[in-house]
Length: 254
Ligand SMILES: Nc1ncnc2c1ncn2[C@@H]1O[C@H](COP(=O)(O)OP(=O)(O)OP(=O)(O)O)[C@@H](O)[C@H]1O
Ligand SMILES: [Mg+2]
Image (cartoon, rainbow, N blue to C red; front, side):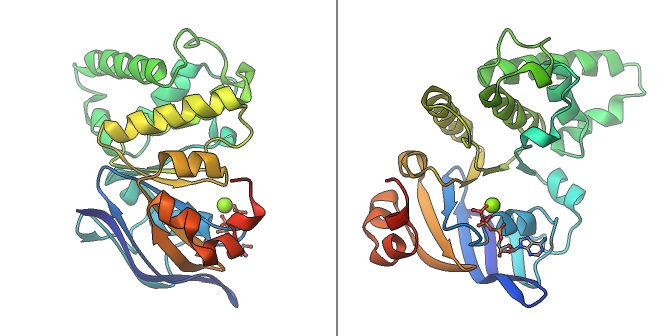
C-alpha cells in the first residue's frame, strides 16, 4: 500500500524546471531510495514533500490525503519528518536536550504539549526523557547523553540528527545523505540503524550518493536526472539499467 504518492509533481525555480512530471509511489514500511546526479532534484523533492517549497504542479498525497498545499508544520504533524542536519543541532546543549527538543517540535508527539500546564506535566516530562534515552541508546549514542552536541565527532552528530527526527514520532522519515563524511564503520552502523528504523514500521525515503549503501539497504530505487524520473526498480534492476549507468552510475563508485 502506498503511504506517499506524488502525482505529476513539478517545481520550477524561475525558468529552471528542478522537478518535472514526477510520479512517485512509496510503499508503507519500505526503504525507498532516490538517487541521481548532483542537481537532479532530489533535495527539491524533499522540500516539496515537507512543504518547504510547495509544488508548482501536481499533487502530493499522504495516507490518502492531499497535503500539497499544507504548511510545513502541518505536514510534520501528520508524521512526515526529515532528519535534521548537523547545522540544526544545538551545539551547546547536551545530546539529551537535543533529543528532547524533538518532542517539543510540531510533530505528532506534540500531543505531549497539551499536558504541559496540567498537573501531569511532570509525568509527561519523565516519559519524554525516558523515550529520549531509549532513542539515544537505539541510535548508538548510549553513554553520551550529557555530552555537548558540539563535542561529538561528525558521525555521532549525524546520528543525533536522526535521533531528534525519531523523537518527532515519524510515519515517514526523509533522510538526505545520512552517511556523508562518515568513515566505513560509522557508515555500516548507520545502515544497520536505517534498517532497524524501517523494521519498527517507519517508512523511509533515502537520498544518498554512496552506491554501496543504496544498493545494500533499498527496497526500491527511483532514479532522477534533470528533474525527471529515468528509472525505477529493485537494486539489481537499477544496477543493470543502461540509461542509469550512462546518466549516473558510470561516474560513481559501485
Ligand atoms: N531554492 C532554489 N532556488 C533556485 N534554484 C534551486 C533552489 N533549490 C534548488 N535549485 C536548483 O534546482 C536543481 C535541483 O537541485 P537539488 O538541490 O534538488 O538537487 P539534488 O539532486 O539534491 O543535488 P545534490 O546531489 O547535489 O544534493 C539544481 O539545478 C539547483 O541549482
Ligand atoms: Mg541534494
